[in-house]
Amino acid sequence: MMDENKQVNNTSQQLGEPIEVQQAMNSDSPAEINSNEFGSEVTEPVSDPTNVVGETTLTPESEVAAVETNEVDTAAIAELTQQVESLRAQLDERNSLYMRIAADFENYRKRTQKEKEETEQQVKRNTINELLPVVDNFERARAHLKPQTDSEMTIHKSYQGVYKQLVDSLKRLGVSPMRPEGQEFDPNLHEAVLREPTDEHPEGTVLEELVRGYYLGDRVLRHAMVKVAAPKEDTPPTSDQELSQDNS
Image (cartoon, rainbow, N blue to C red):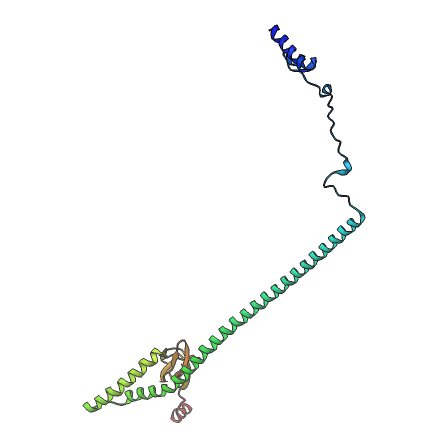
């Protein structure tokens, strides 16, 4: 081992290396090598704090410009906010107007529909009222005519068939007859043309229907002409009875 070290030292001396380097190479533990020993000093440049990249210095002119920019932005935002509020108010007004127009149209539709129905009912009432006298004549003929021969019976059946057809047509239109006999007199339904004194029925009872009344649906089409019961008056005494009472 010693012979190898001597050989290395001899080689190093021949190459002109310093002895310290040789000793460092020959030592068992590595040692820090000072770069100053080799004559080369490394210096790090110190950065100037005034030359930092990206750093800006605010001047009075830039501060004024920034303030003016902020004021312009605030004014623009305020103007946009005012425009938004104005548009919102217009939208609310349009919605309110639309709702009123829709409500008015719905009321108009209902009113016109009701007027249309009333007009149709009035036309129907007028038409049927013109046909009711024909029905009355058929009923009078049936009540008074009594066929005796076969030819008379044939004629009777013919016009009764026409009467039945007419009555069926009126029923399909919603016409129904009144049945007031035995009921209490109602001025909304009946028209009293005769009063008959009687003690068999209470006062105001309908005794007979002289001209038939009719309904159209649930409304009165024609009032019934009736005879109404009246209270029976006591018969006044005769002259003979009066004289006998005086003599006694």
